[in-house]
Image (cartoon, rainbow, N blue to C red; front, top):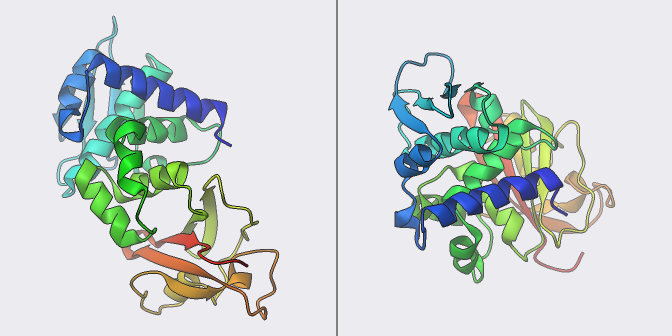
Length: 257
Protein backbone atom coordinates (compact mmCIF):
# COMPACT_ATOMS: atom_id res chain seq x y z
CA UNK A 1 0.00 0.00 0.00
CA UNK A 2 1.34 3.41 -0.96
CA UNK A 3 2.33 5.68 1.93
CA UNK A 4 0.66 9.04 2.51
CA UNK A 5 3.87 10.88 1.59
CA UNK A 6 4.10 9.00 -1.72
CA UNK A 7 0.46 9.69 -2.48
CA UNK A 8 1.01 13.37 -1.74
CA UNK A 9 4.04 13.49 -4.05
CA UNK A 10 2.13 11.84 -6.91
CA UNK A 11 -0.86 14.11 -6.40
CA UNK A 12 1.31 17.24 -6.46
CA UNK A 13 2.91 16.09 -9.72
CA UNK A 14 -0.53 15.52 -11.24
CA UNK A 15 -1.63 19.00 -10.19
CA UNK A 16 1.39 20.49 -11.99
CA UNK A 17 0.70 18.37 -15.09
CA UNK A 18 -2.84 19.71 -15.10
CA UNK A 19 -1.54 23.26 -14.92
CA UNK A 20 0.60 22.51 -18.00
CA UNK A 21 -2.25 20.84 -19.93
CA UNK A 22 -0.21 17.69 -20.57
CA UNK A 23 -1.87 15.01 -22.70
CA UNK A 24 1.14 13.15 -24.16
CA UNK A 25 4.82 12.63 -23.21
CA UNK A 26 6.09 15.26 -25.67
CA UNK A 27 4.05 17.91 -23.82
CA UNK A 28 6.13 17.50 -20.63
CA UNK A 29 8.38 20.55 -20.97
CA UNK A 30 10.49 20.81 -17.83
CA UNK A 31 11.59 24.37 -18.56
CA UNK A 32 7.93 25.39 -18.49
CA UNK A 33 7.28 23.21 -15.44
CA UNK A 34 10.16 24.87 -13.60
CA UNK A 35 9.02 28.34 -14.63
CA UNK A 36 5.55 27.53 -13.29
CA UNK A 37 7.28 27.06 -9.91
CA UNK A 38 9.33 30.27 -10.17
CA UNK A 39 12.52 28.42 -11.17
CA UNK A 40 15.00 28.68 -14.01
CA UNK A 41 17.06 25.68 -15.16
CA UNK A 42 20.82 25.99 -15.59
CA UNK A 43 23.54 23.52 -16.51
CA UNK A 44 26.98 23.37 -14.93
CA UNK A 45 28.54 24.84 -11.84
CA UNK A 46 28.48 21.54 -9.91
CA UNK A 47 31.46 19.30 -9.16
CA UNK A 48 30.43 16.76 -6.56
CA UNK A 49 26.62 16.85 -6.92
CA UNK A 50 24.34 15.93 -9.83
CA UNK A 51 21.59 18.43 -9.07
CA UNK A 52 20.85 21.40 -6.87
CA UNK A 53 17.83 23.49 -5.98
CA UNK A 54 18.69 26.99 -4.83
CA UNK A 55 15.64 28.63 -3.29
CA UNK A 56 15.51 32.41 -3.62
CA UNK A 57 13.19 34.99 -2.08
CA UNK A 58 9.56 35.49 -3.13
CA UNK A 59 9.10 32.03 -4.66
CA UNK A 60 12.11 32.47 -6.97
CA UNK A 61 15.17 30.28 -7.41
CA UNK A 62 16.98 28.05 -9.86
CA UNK A 63 17.82 24.44 -10.62
CA UNK A 64 21.33 23.36 -11.56
CA UNK A 65 22.24 20.10 -13.30
CA UNK A 66 25.82 18.92 -13.44
CA UNK A 67 27.41 19.31 -16.87
CA UNK A 68 28.58 16.13 -18.54
CA UNK A 69 25.67 13.85 -17.64
CA UNK A 70 25.32 11.98 -20.92
CA UNK A 71 21.79 10.61 -20.50
CA UNK A 72 19.06 13.10 -21.43
CA UNK A 73 16.59 11.00 -19.45
CA UNK A 74 18.73 11.20 -16.33
CA UNK A 75 19.10 14.98 -16.71
CA UNK A 76 15.34 15.32 -17.02
CA UNK A 77 14.79 13.15 -13.96
CA UNK A 78 17.16 15.35 -11.94
CA UNK A 79 15.32 18.50 -12.99
CA UNK A 80 12.02 16.84 -12.08
CA UNK A 81 13.48 15.87 -8.71
CA UNK A 82 14.47 19.47 -7.93
CA UNK A 83 11.06 20.75 -9.05
CA UNK A 84 9.61 18.16 -6.68
CA UNK A 85 11.58 19.64 -3.81
CA UNK A 86 10.15 23.07 -4.65
CA UNK A 87 6.55 21.87 -4.87
CA UNK A 88 6.74 19.58 -1.83
CA UNK A 89 9.28 21.20 0.47
CA UNK A 90 8.73 24.86 -0.46
CA UNK A 91 11.55 27.30 0.22
CA UNK A 92 14.32 24.93 1.25
CA UNK A 93 17.47 24.46 -0.86
CA UNK A 94 18.79 20.99 -1.68
CA UNK A 95 22.01 19.49 -3.06
CA UNK A 96 21.54 16.03 -4.55
CA UNK A 97 24.08 13.33 -5.35
CA UNK A 98 23.55 9.81 -6.66
CA UNK A 99 22.69 8.78 -3.12
CA UNK A 100 19.69 11.13 -2.89
CA UNK A 101 18.57 10.50 -6.48
CA UNK A 102 18.38 6.74 -5.88
CA UNK A 103 16.73 6.87 -2.45
CA UNK A 104 13.34 5.21 -2.08
CA UNK A 105 13.26 4.79 1.70
CA UNK A 106 10.00 5.63 3.44
CA UNK A 107 9.45 9.03 5.08
CA UNK A 108 12.42 10.53 3.25
CA UNK A 109 12.13 13.90 1.44
CA UNK A 110 14.46 12.56 -1.25
CA UNK A 111 12.11 9.63 -1.84
CA UNK A 112 9.23 12.09 -2.12
CA UNK A 113 11.10 14.16 -4.71
CA UNK A 114 11.99 10.99 -6.65
CA UNK A 115 8.36 9.82 -6.65
CA UNK A 116 7.26 13.30 -7.75
CA UNK A 117 9.72 13.30 -10.66
CA UNK A 118 8.65 9.83 -11.78
CA UNK A 119 4.97 10.82 -11.80
CA UNK A 120 5.73 14.12 -13.54
CA UNK A 121 7.66 12.39 -16.34
CA UNK A 122 5.59 9.18 -16.50
CA UNK A 123 2.06 10.15 -15.41
CA UNK A 124 -0.27 7.26 -14.71
CA UNK A 125 -2.73 8.08 -17.50
CA UNK A 126 0.08 7.85 -20.09
CA UNK A 127 2.24 5.17 -18.45
CA UNK A 128 -0.25 2.48 -17.46
CA UNK A 129 -1.54 1.80 -21.01
CA UNK A 130 2.05 1.13 -22.09
CA UNK A 131 2.67 -1.66 -19.56
CA UNK A 132 -0.53 -3.70 -19.68
CA UNK A 133 0.57 -6.40 -22.14
CA UNK A 134 4.33 -6.63 -21.52
CA UNK A 135 6.24 -8.97 -19.24
CA UNK A 136 8.72 -7.31 -16.86
CA UNK A 137 12.36 -7.11 -17.92
CA UNK A 138 15.15 -4.56 -17.87
CA UNK A 139 15.01 -4.44 -21.67
CA UNK A 140 11.37 -3.35 -21.46
CA UNK A 141 12.21 -0.83 -18.72
CA UNK A 142 14.91 0.70 -20.92
CA UNK A 143 12.45 0.98 -23.80
CA UNK A 144 9.98 2.75 -21.52
CA UNK A 145 12.68 5.08 -20.18
CA UNK A 146 13.49 6.11 -23.77
CA UNK A 147 9.79 6.57 -24.58
CA UNK A 148 9.28 8.92 -21.62
CA UNK A 149 12.84 10.31 -21.54
CA UNK A 150 13.62 9.57 -17.92
CA UNK A 151 15.98 7.42 -15.87
CA UNK A 152 16.08 3.63 -15.87
CA UNK A 153 15.66 3.33 -12.09
CA UNK A 154 12.69 5.71 -11.93
CA UNK A 155 11.03 3.75 -14.74
CA UNK A 156 11.34 0.47 -12.82
CA UNK A 157 9.89 2.02 -9.66
CA UNK A 158 7.00 3.44 -11.67
CA UNK A 159 6.42 0.04 -13.28
CA UNK A 160 6.40 -1.67 -9.87
CA UNK A 161 3.86 0.90 -8.67
CA UNK A 162 1.36 0.33 -11.47
CA UNK A 163 1.84 -3.23 -12.75
CA UNK A 164 -0.57 -6.02 -11.87
CA UNK A 165 2.23 -8.58 -12.21
CA UNK A 166 3.75 -9.96 -8.99
CA UNK A 167 7.07 -8.11 -9.22
CA UNK A 168 9.63 -6.58 -6.88
CA UNK A 169 12.76 -4.49 -7.21
CA UNK A 170 15.73 -5.05 -4.90
CA UNK A 171 18.41 -2.34 -4.84
CA UNK A 172 21.72 -3.73 -3.55
CA UNK A 173 25.00 -1.90 -2.93
CA UNK A 174 28.28 -3.74 -2.36
CA UNK A 175 26.40 -6.96 -1.75
CA UNK A 176 23.96 -5.56 0.81
CA UNK A 177 20.22 -4.99 0.21
CA UNK A 178 19.52 -1.27 0.70
CA UNK A 179 15.83 -1.06 -0.16
CA UNK A 180 12.99 -3.02 -1.75
CA UNK A 181 9.90 -2.03 -3.72
CA UNK A 182 7.02 -4.47 -4.26
CA UNK A 183 4.01 -4.46 -6.57
CA UNK A 184 0.51 -4.60 -5.09
CA UNK A 185 0.23 -8.30 -6.06
CA UNK A 186 3.56 -9.39 -4.53
CA UNK A 187 2.86 -11.76 -1.59
CA UNK A 188 6.26 -12.94 -0.36
CA UNK A 189 8.85 -11.74 2.15
CA UNK A 190 12.20 -10.81 0.60
CA UNK A 191 15.46 -11.43 2.41
CA UNK A 192 17.36 -8.34 3.46
CA UNK A 193 20.97 -8.08 4.59
CA UNK A 194 23.66 -9.79 2.51
CA UNK A 195 22.68 -10.82 -1.02
CA UNK A 196 22.68 -14.60 -1.44
CA UNK A 197 25.44 -16.00 -3.64
CA UNK A 198 22.94 -18.10 -5.60
CA UNK A 199 20.99 -15.04 -6.76
CA UNK A 200 21.72 -13.15 -9.96
CA UNK A 201 22.82 -10.14 -7.91
CA UNK A 202 25.03 -12.39 -5.80
CA UNK A 203 26.82 -13.61 -8.93
CA UNK A 204 27.49 -10.01 -9.94
CA UNK A 205 28.94 -9.11 -6.54
CA UNK A 206 31.14 -12.22 -6.73
CA UNK A 207 32.68 -11.12 -10.01
CA UNK A 208 30.62 -13.18 -12.44
CA UNK A 209 29.07 -11.62 -15.58
CA UNK A 210 25.37 -10.86 -15.40
CA UNK A 211 23.03 -12.74 -17.74
CA UNK A 212 20.65 -10.79 -19.96
CA UNK A 213 16.93 -11.19 -19.42
CA UNK A 214 14.83 -13.03 -16.88
CA UNK A 215 16.62 -16.14 -15.59
CA UNK A 216 15.49 -18.85 -13.19
CA UNK A 217 16.75 -18.24 -9.64
CA UNK A 218 16.25 -20.47 -6.57
CA UNK A 219 13.31 -19.04 -4.65
CA UNK A 220 15.24 -19.53 -1.41
CA UNK A 221 17.93 -17.11 -2.59
CA UNK A 222 15.42 -14.27 -2.20
CA UNK A 223 12.29 -15.43 -0.39
CA UNK A 224 12.27 -16.15 3.33
CA UNK A 225 9.47 -18.72 2.98
CA UNK A 226 11.76 -21.10 1.05
CA UNK A 227 15.02 -22.84 1.89
CA UNK A 228 17.88 -22.61 -0.57
CA UNK A 229 17.47 -26.37 -1.20
CA UNK A 230 13.85 -26.00 -2.25
CA UNK A 231 13.00 -26.87 -5.84
CA UNK A 232 10.89 -23.72 -6.15
CA UNK A 233 12.22 -20.96 -8.38
CA UNK A 234 11.39 -17.40 -9.37
CA UNK A 235 12.58 -15.17 -12.22
CA UNK A 236 15.29 -12.55 -11.80
CA UNK A 237 16.67 -9.98 -14.24
CA UNK A 238 19.74 -8.09 -13.02
CA UNK A 239 20.98 -4.71 -14.23
CA UNK A 240 24.44 -3.92 -12.85
CA UNK A 241 26.06 -0.53 -12.30
CA UNK A 242 29.68 -1.62 -11.75
CA UNK A 243 31.02 1.92 -11.29
CA UNK A 244 28.63 2.39 -8.36
CA UNK A 245 28.81 -1.23 -7.15
CA UNK A 246 25.03 -1.47 -7.46
CA UNK A 247 22.76 -4.27 -8.67
CA UNK A 248 19.10 -3.81 -9.56
CA UNK A 249 17.29 -7.15 -9.22
CA UNK A 250 13.92 -7.23 -10.93
CA UNK A 251 12.08 -10.21 -9.43
CA UNK A 252 9.01 -11.80 -11.00
CA UNK A 253 6.84 -14.74 -10.00
CA UNK A 254 5.42 -15.96 -13.29
CA UNK A 255 4.13 -19.32 -12.05
CA UNK A 256 2.61 -20.79 -8.90
CA UNK A 257 5.09 -21.22 -6.05
